[in-house]
Length: 124
Image (cartoon, rainbow, N blue to C red; front, side, top):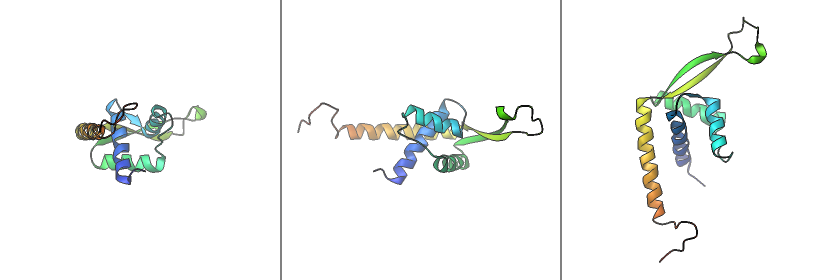
């Protein structure tokens, strides 16, 4: 239905938009996308994490590691926990997001010239 490039661009737009609100880790990004889309959109780990690595490589997001201890391993001081990577939008990422949003809005406006609103008949 959608081209692979268009889907990738839209997914990046969504991820960058979420990170605009503040730092998030991968699983939280995935859950927020599923929740907001009422499970219509899901970014699997095989799609999300390579995208996040690409965004990081391109300087659009920064990543920091945090060691997280599991509640189930309480009292196990020998275990440092598992790493959790937090992603933050960079200044370059904010500029890219604004550019992508402007392009998206321009495309919506252009399509609106050809696709009538629901319940409205074409006048031509």
